[in-house]
Image (cartoon, rainbow, N blue to C red; front, side):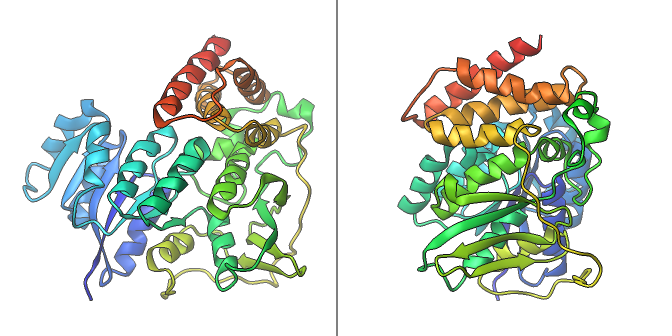
Length: 384
């Protein structure tokens, strides 16, 4: 069997490192062709030494010489740097699939290049569809490229649709852990810190996504992503707070039947399923014990979690609105982690940015980049 060649965009992050675990467990089937990182040059070099990819890319060009030096005794590994290099490497002929595990807006351009190069996309970068869902899904259809979801919730929906793709979806039930502040009052949430927000109750994720989970902006983005992935209007996507994170999401059909995917909180499963679909391979690790705890479900409080409401508002407005929300969120998320704005201020600044930003009803790719830049400037000015 020919080994599938995989390019991992963001190999040093939480998804990327777990993807490498999947590749290692099934080394007879998969091989890392290219690994990339933004700034973690030492970790990238360490991964390169272990997995021997054909190439590595460090997005931060200032780190290029350091990476070259660290891999000086590995002449077979080509070293590149910069945003353009990320876009170029995904087009390499040997690559069979691209795992887009970069965080934020920066994942959009290389994902588009991978689609146009007709590579299978394993999508973990939700911002790609949040920002430019209509454009990206249109390109995927044009180039006949499969986009397989890696987010645990979207993978669960995808798995629940297998065998039922022709049947009408009545509702998507998108689950959320509720984060660390689910039981906090608005008054308590005014004073929470980044350290508090980074203590996620069930998932081990990177800092940016963990903060987004605490504010429920991450869930808002997943609503937008689900709209594009599964062709379901936002008013038929219901968010359920499910603290145990065992039911990863579900689909309700027009006959009232609900199909769900359950499992322990382990991102290796959706990663591996995207790599192997429609086949399922053995995976080592913990198994679900349904006797261990009850399964609870609650409605989200949109007053406390304004960011989730803003995602629905962005869908309602359409055009470049979601792009604006994403850009403003990236700014306030970082500012909160740096102690420059409060937890509840994040939603307030995003809402004001959405109202102030230029409205573009039918944006082009260039418009998305311009909107991203404008929204970041507006949000940053409000923080200052």
